[in-house]
Image (cartoon, rainbow, N blue to C red; front, top):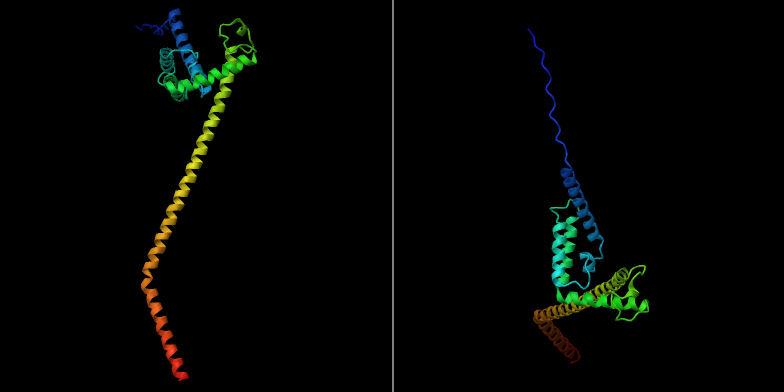
Length: 227
């Protein structure tokens, strides 16, 4: 007697809960934000560490370090699939290093102070005008944007001058090096000429002796002929 069997039913697909969906969306948003931050760092003005770290010029050293730690963990190449994450990570590290260097930060702050003065002068405002002054509100472009742009212009000028100075120093060093090489070459030539003179001394003496002997013979022959 044959018996009919029912086909096995397919395993039920686990239902995706709202919590699971929220986690998935959160992970995707986090990955997207990491890539956005990598792009921001890559596009930041490389001569302004404040721009790279996206912090205020008035930030304390502790705030600089804290901001660096936050960003370096956020865009770390091990956590970010962006192909240029390692490059952004290195740029971030360099920016933190420059702001941690007292002399470099003072030089940078001096340029930014100069930029601030130029922006305030262009607005016909006193140089002592604080950032919180109502006159600086509602500007288009905003005061901070103007300050960053003016700082960028001055920093580019500084970099151009620095590179020209390096180029000039290298040229001067090259000229000095050529002079030294020429002096060394001249001394070598002189030494070789002196050595050659010494080496040919006997030959010159023999030549002189032969010449003197021939001269005496000619004189005797002439005397005999006349006598």
